[in-house]
Length: 622
Image 1 (tube, one colour):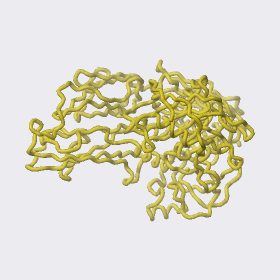
Image 2 (cartoon, helix red, strand yellow):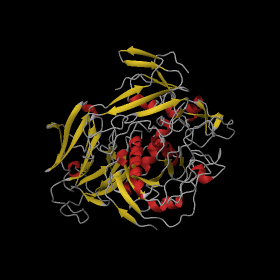
Image 3 (cartoon, helix red, strand yellow):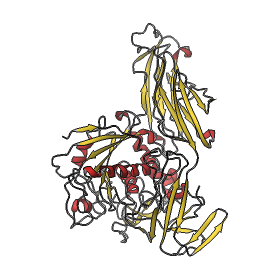
């Protein structure tokens, strides 16, 4: 197809995103790393459960630890079909998957909520079952992963299943994690395109698109989202939908006006510019039906590989991720407190905003301005007992349903007849000087639009004072805030940020230098030079290479990332995007990867999405 616009027409990759569907452990030190196809149309495909033989020994590696497992969302990733000699390959592929995940909302903004643990298992044999065809051999692997729904002739090739029993046993090796606070992701040693999203998510590790499969499958497993495909078998449009109003939050039979009138489905998002292109509205097709049912966006993570979650799906993913973590990360112990005590709490810390904290005394709000502590001695309490309540609310713009906002409360009984010197119920007061107890990691640079946080040791008599400095100059902190939002400072270039409590100091490098992406194009039919950069016209097949660089010496990217676009397919085995290496495993300031689709919007100026055809963009990098 030739466009009249003097730009590149990049056809989006629309491969099906796959299906919904007592060992000993060794601890190893870690480093910072950082229902899909259904069994049949209308039939939720759960991952296959098979009897597991003797389970090989495994090594649990903490890849990213942001806090105690009991109070975090824990992503437990395990590899299958990697021999002992191939475990470095598993680590490299895991790093790639995580770097992509951290660039996609809500994982990007809520990375601090997530612990990541790798369970490394040396497989007796390399590979997975029935890869790539049903006539391929079955492999002796710990998780018994296999394509074709576990070598089922009635399934589809892309359905990569795992033994839930075996995966659960290995996940149980990670201390502090349970089914309530973790999500299991199994990565198979294969270059074949595939994955699944039942109770546990799966993805192949070595396919060029594998890292983009993972967030889609987590949409199923974590978010309970359904596929938005209008087909089940690729190239064969699905039959019309014949059922009742779907229970799916992102599929409906209602018109836009009915949604607004009845306050149902995605009525709060109608008319908004979609994060995945176009506007939030009503687009026909989904749940494998070609017509008769509607979805919110023309394209989204749950329909087309490479797009972001649209707002409707992102809202659900934010809710589910937050629900597996604990908003209260610490507080004054529950129970009676003295009338002159300092009552404190600690919250979780999103990367891009603060959680809101309100305090009430006997139901009356206190003017605490989002403070994390209340000095009861300053309240001039009336005689008797009072109830002090703290509420934490995440007022993220990702969630518009007030009833769904992550919220937590905690209460204390204040006894005005008691003081910290006389109350037997008051927690012991430490006389040790205050120190930092937790913080935004200092091992890697922070972005110029992040919210940096610290937490300190606590006292019942005073809230330790925090002093923030940027390049040696004090940053005003009238509220003694534990969070410092960098975005309002409008920083460019490089800076040194420090936080001090008592004699303890932490320091971060603030990276305000934008990375650059340089495209290399195959020979076009026509090149037009413009002030914003060259624009190209192609007819049919073309290739594009993306080379990403960053001036930070701790950063490196894989270059020569070539994508060959032919219609709607991509040549298997070729890397489609550069990735941030393990030497700088941080959540990127902008998207740290690029494919031939709308994800390039954060890297290239002048991007517009054309629903149904792809993305039009120039080569000018930011």
